[in-house]
Length: 284
Image (cartoon, rainbow, N blue to C red):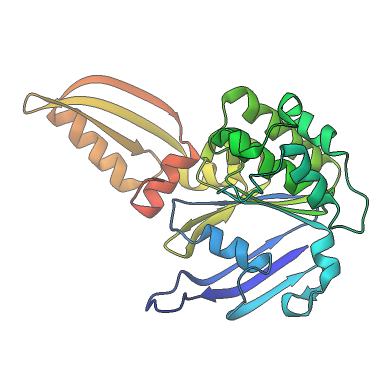
């Protein structure tokens, strides 16, 4: 469905690349997660794939067509959800979707039906200027799916949503996958990625650190971890050790032999912990 090879991008006036020689493939009907902290280059890649930024270096093929050769038919069958809402705030939620649906020549969903998917049916005729941040985020997501796209680009789709609404949005995403749609998801939410993605790539400072299915990444990089709470110089410290790494096993032995252990828990490593180990930084 999508093949990206050696993609690099540098913003005007910057000496460093925002994205550096990244490559990945996404099969039809897959949910592919691009994971990393703010500023990692996730949104830059999405903007290039959707034509909002012109490709500078590398190659991108979508359904066998080079991205520079894509025509208006491509935009008929994609949906894009942005992290920051960009709505017509003088229009109601229903009017926003109705207007946007009218831009497509293909059949679209009923705006009221889509609003019900994201829990906005009771606010359909309220001006979006009166919407909360979470409501605006839901409307942006609803707009992305109104044309029943074959390829869906989602940038932090659960940002600002309460747990119940987030669950509803996740259901819509997985329903699209079950119908054979392809989904490109950019997020720093490792729990979401672990739950719904077929494959993921860790992105940090414009480079891919690792890429595979969530399960294989945890088996390869995570193994089992041990979280140890211990006392050192009258302070309580917490340290995480990965049992698949020799240096961590050596350090764990040093802590056990040298300090008073307060608690010790073993478990499977999370994707976030693996990212921290690979990148040397957190997701915020």
